[in-house]
Image (cartoon, rainbow, N blue to C red; front, side, top):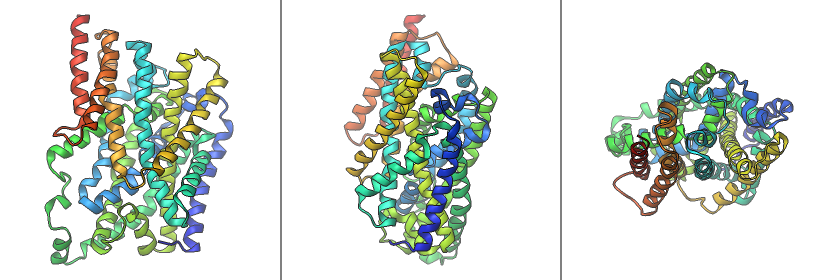
Length: 458
């Protein structure tokens, strides 16, 4: 797959215009709170842009088309599940979390279960977030390598530079501004492309369509079965609710009500965004069955769309990868500075915390690029779902109980729930395919330990 000079120019112009807007917004950021939380003054658009900009990354774009190419409509569960979760977050979690005035999930857990719980949760959440960064890094490296005709190593280096320009200097403010602009680009250009693909599929003769998609699971959200679909959604929900990046956007809100409204707006952006990618993936299955699955989306744009739409859409896809990596790295860097370095070394200097956060973000970007280079042939959504399971298995129930039923669990049992249940989920995942998702094993162990903690407290 090679790009014409016209498509390349339009793609790069789109990317640099959005990055430039984020850099312009970054000129006023000069404190740790301003970098990580936008000075706690974010409005609804900035919150929605930060959340949607982070979740709509490699998994939601390239990964969804890749999965639709192999299994059809059930690929929608990633963005559909995320959108439904943001609605739940807005109704139940946002106001209570923003009302605490904290900065990270581990800080919140420390207030209920002690410092050991904060340290454990920050390490667990950081590892889980790192796997999400891997998902978008895989897509970004493959995309840049294919579009520009450069080696994967060079593509990884270029991707890191673009993410640095996008979010490194301005933190949450750059991520929010960039997220808003990126979603505008994706909605307009990819909707046009997706509708075009859908109309082509709709025009296929019934016999030809049945020959390409012979089984109903291709056109069913259930995919491999209702149980599997619900397990996928619950895993997604648990993981998203426990992700520092999305909760950090809530903490950055001007008021609790603004935080909730930002979650609702993000849901409205995220739920429909997967449909165009599914239409494109299924179209390529029907008309280009020999294409490399991870390159289904960019191949369609280059070979089936006009120059302008292709260039803008490719720019939007690249921005989705950049913003997702940047937003997740920012969340992970904030936990490292506030919950690990700040707690262990008792750092209180705002300026020093700012430097630690930026340094952590840079190291995360370099590490994720190197890790992705050694796993280039892996499935993008595999890393996303693994990330959700790791983040949610041990943290979801302790965090939820601390929000809605505080003071009823002895701290040592809260710490045990976070650590032991995560270990159980990881061990289950390492054992290979099981009849039950590892995240539910972690949740079951977590629930048992919390019940014992409640009995002791009672």
